[in-house]
Length: 432
Image (cartoon, rainbow, N blue to C red):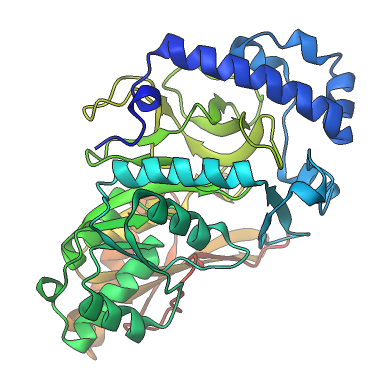
């Protein structure tokens, strides 16, 4: 099923023409309406007339989260507040929230791109979609909500948490599609097991998971425990929210809605564009947003792009699952470490649960990486020799993967905190 065939199956030449026309218009608008952009372009010696096609995108300056915070709350908006009908904001870990605004047209665009992603995932109007993403300032819940309604599916807007109720409604309402973070889906699977609910008792067939990085091993774990097809969706509030890209049923990369969001891959150190197929930092330029268009926004997510036509028939460029973030990456004794590397190791082992916590300390000027790992209930034993053997096995596998020493601590099932939102995987206690 394809929602908008003329766009999703457009030729590369047709897409470039659409992108060029929309980019020229967007650059003109931000130059006239946003002092911060006008100043950046003037410093780069640019005027809007210098941008004649999508090929000129590389001439434009980057936008970062700092720009949004420096112009907090509404300094990056291109329209008066009388035209803004919705405001969302990301929580952020440091500094002020990043605030985004939507006009009525922006909300229509958002519903359109989410409708496309839902169709990619195999969702249709007969589906019952349980949205367990948070509603409110977070874009996940409401973003998915309007896309679901737009295609005619039935929505259960339960939001995050209240796990007992989630499971009850899945059974009573016959939920067929679950939308939440991947870590929360595994928590739901745990609670199902504890409550004696079998996956065969439910009508679930598709899960649409995003808002945090997850691995192929985690996908297999989710699909096995819930009996569903697990689809990766990508979005960020600064660009629009969910609906920037999503996998189709072939699960071979996330199709980017590139008529609205032009992607680039750059080297995060040199900031130069990288050749097709190279892994680097993902950058987006929004070319249809009215409220807060962003030029070359640095997402900090690391991935690569694939321009080949997909088996599903779509020609939209595909992005791989994000391999981590250029700013969330841990550097331990000179080695780059991503939490997803450790997650992959743990999910390959039958003895461990997919819940872990990385704690980084600095002792005597040396970085120490401690890994807390939950052991599956049937393998957790009072026999010290058995647990010590398991601990050594996990330690060896992680050290072989990372190339550095780690301290592994085994903990009982359900020891590590669960959350309905993004799982907290790292505590960095170093003063860097």
